[in-house]
Amino acid sequence: DNSPAIGEAYNGVFYSLKDIGIPLNAKFFFQLVFAGTAATIVSGAVAERIKFSAFCLFSVLLVGIIYPITGHWIWGGGWLGGGWLEWLKFWDFAGSTVVHCVGGGSALVGAYLLGPRKGKYIDGVSYGLPGHNLSLAILGCSILWLGWFGFNPGSSIFNPGTTNLDPNSISHIVLTTNIAACAGGIAAAITTWFDPRDPDSKPDPTMIINGVLSGLVAITASCAFVTIGKAIAIGLLAGIIVVFSVDFWDRMKIDDPVGAISVHLVSGVWGTLALALFSEGPGDLYSIGNGPVAGLFCGGGIDSIRQLFIQLLGIVAVGLSTVVMSWLAWLFVKSILSSSLRVTEKAEIEGLDFHEHRMTAYSGFLLKADVKQSSLRDQQRHN
Image (tube, rainbow, N blue to C red; front, top):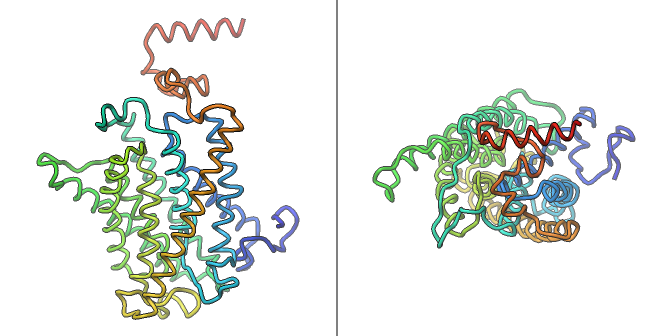
């Protein structure tokens, strides 16, 4: 494989990088961020108990091996992208499976191997461990939401057969992306507000955040291929699904502090399947060869059923390979460190900011005695 460092000609594993008259460096950076996104997804599910060194090593393996293999299958002319099995055409416009299912699957394996945080499950009962700052969580959601307007429309440069960037297509992708996020947040708010299991239920801000992100993840596969109305439907269902998914993994005793598995893996699966249900088919939105056949709910008939099977096959193939490779990667990291992947119980209670980085992120959490001891240590170190 070659890289941008040795010239403009590209003959590597991501065949789509050859399309469009855009500098290879720009396309390389765009795909680099996609790979990094898969790694950051994992961080949320393993937070508050993983060693920093373990996460860094796993991220290298995920970005360097796992993501390129599965990504090549779909976006690089591999067997899911129409390589040696030309008849098998799996569609994922901007990464519901390529990025989010891979990141979410790796997160699931990591969370399972690490085990839950201390105090999360006591005598079989799940206890909530609330985050530190809900305002920052909402800010983070807003930043991600904004980033998706580069994530999805930017993928137009890799659309097979495209020779120029169509402003109409890009603006349509922006709208479907945004409306799906809105629908996901609204659906999650209503689902938590009117929960029949809790007569005193209220709209949950943390779940609204997950609903917004789930809508974004779900629309990522089909953002260029569905109408605004269909994007609303995809987002609404994503917002409902994520609420029950978070509860499901919690009952399975999989401790996922931020709901990353539900937001990325589960919503990624839904979005990938939704493409075969709601795609408009070649016409106003895209031409023949540049998108899937009409979806099952859009008069696609037998061809849409075949497309649904292909989408399901792709999910299973990527999912199984991700689980196997990430499991081996986590075990390899554990062998390299010659110890556990997670910090000690003492370190977990003290907090990873201080234990892993010798820094305190929130001084308000410190007792006066702790501050005094910390100051003495700093003074001794400088002397």
